[in-house]
Length: 139
Image (cartoon, rainbow, N blue to C red):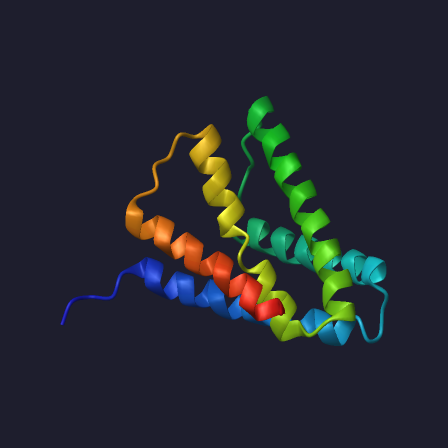
């Protein structure tokens, strides 16, 4: 039997962490409003990040363009997290998480337009199915 690649276990870890990340906000927003939940979620992320960076003795790169893009990425992520918290506080976690999990469709579009990445027929069919799934999931 072939050795299982390291990325596979890392992917399962991400899947599990994001699964809990999608589940906990529904419970959290029964006790806190979405803005407060975002504050505490951000603090949790900062604490986790500082612990990990300390353990691995990390020193960040300081390329100006990279730093600016990193900050922009964080701002987009937090804007999405706030919108997600409002959505999950008003809707079913199972529906909200599934719908927001289709964000790769936007990544594909932006990558096609700005990075000139190609999309083959099989991928285009998959994209179409994902869009149909989103419509079917919310009606």
